[in-house]
Amino acid sequence: MMNTDTVLKPISPILAQLQNVSKKYGAVTALNGLNLSVHAGEVLALLGPNGAGKTTAVSLWLNLLQPDAGAVTLFDLAASTRAARLRVGVMMQAADLPDTLKVCELIELTQSYYSKPRDKTELYAMSGIAELLQRPYGKLSGGQQRRVQFALAICAHVDILFLDEPTTGLDIDAREAMWRSVRTLVDSGVAIVLTTHYLEEAEALANRVVVIAQGQIVAEGSVEAIRGRVAVKSIRCVTKTSAEIVRTWTDVESAVLKAEMLHIQTIHAEAVVRQLLEADPDLSQLEITRAGLAEAFVQLTKEQ
Amino acid sequence: MTKASEALPNAFSIYALEARFEFIRTLRMPSFAIPSLLFPAMFYLLFGILMASKQGGVKASTYLLCTYLIFGAMGPGLFGFGVSVAVERDKGWLKWRRAVPSLAGAYFVSKMLMAMGFAFIIFLELALIAATLGGVQLTLLQWFLLLLITLFAALPFCALGLVVGTLVNSQAAPAIINFIYLPMAFLSGLWIPLTVLPKYIAAVAPVWPSYHAAQIALKVVGADSGVPLWQHLAYLAGVTALMLYAAIALWSRMKLK
Image (cartoon, rainbow over all chains, first blue to last red; front, side):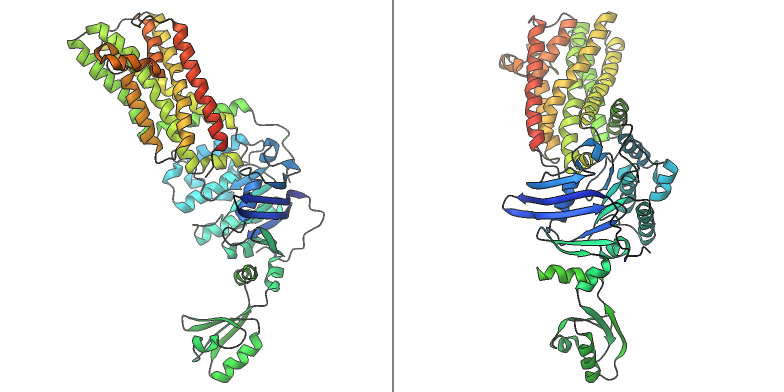
């Protein structure tokens, strides 16, 4: 697993930048003076609820939208230039490729766009599509299509990759394999912008997390730092005390019974544990953990 | 880390590859390939050969060869642009193409070449039927001119299809294209000669671009209505330019889904 505490080297050049970018759809403000930079060799995870602006931010870099104000650059070039596009790989959500083309044909076509196509053997190994090459894209399962889309994203030597929910629909093995490939790319200096709902993915890959809500950055830092921003801790135990009662205690955020285990979220774990033990001295399997990114993320966006 | 491209990929090879794959992938779509490639030949066989053998003979078979060639050339252009653009936009392929360094021009040129490629196959089918079963005898020059006209007749319908494809969604596109394609072919006298149809249909026929394309083809066999060639060409060029103008305006306002 990648060390999520990796300190960003300040010397890493900035590859992609949004400077004071605003974007409105009619009366709705999608982005409100957003500043965001992506450095070489980092995995930046963009998190946020639906409609928060993360898709808009990425769409600006992908040449799909124009900002109302501010500058959108890739390698100091305008995002719409071919020179910029040649250095970008992309894996989108809801972007179907032609159904009747075979996988090998899609690879050949996409590679023809780029000036530095990746060696085919290496590409097939990195994306795990070797056995799919002769199959028409439309006949593949959702997970297989996802792997092909990943292969197209990395079919050339690019400097930055935009991956939108890359592992949805993949089984555990395929997901782990894709993560391994992503880490290999990052080690070689490629920057990754990851938008995901799947927080485990951000935890596994990202060395920087940016949480966007209502068109602005509400939190930014390493996975650890984001987690630390939120004091919530999880308590789990088997006890006779009911969730309904625990929920009435001070500082208890939530309490639910899942598979015989009582799950409690609180910022004052010690006080709650004391109360739990007083209420039921026979409680067992007590566990206290710091919140995962999922809990931190929910908390941060709730504060808005 | 890689540096900015030293050598840009060769634009010609991208165009060639896009055109090849556009042709292959439409050929593999039964809903597109079967009606485009079979209907003109089937209709010609029925109306131009079987029915003509009872009435009109070789002369009728020759006349209908010209009009069914135009009918054949209309389909791939109309469907290749009208339906494909709508589907490819709605499925997100156009969005993906904008994000990668694909060439926008190659998208259109590959579809035009695909339509011309289909028109070429349709020409071979109809020419084979005409020369064998229909007893149609033409000089080599006449065959060549008919081929040329068939290929280029596809282009105004590419432009018309593009307008529809940018305007409507993928669910509506096939119905709308059929609603343009089939009535226009009939009203231009492509299935049954205008002389056999009611007078008012013949009177309105010069409105349809397909009528002018058919008149150009009929000139090759000396069966046209006698209007100078340049008038037909000018009308077709005008319609194509107007459609392209509309398509460009609509394209830039089109929302990529």
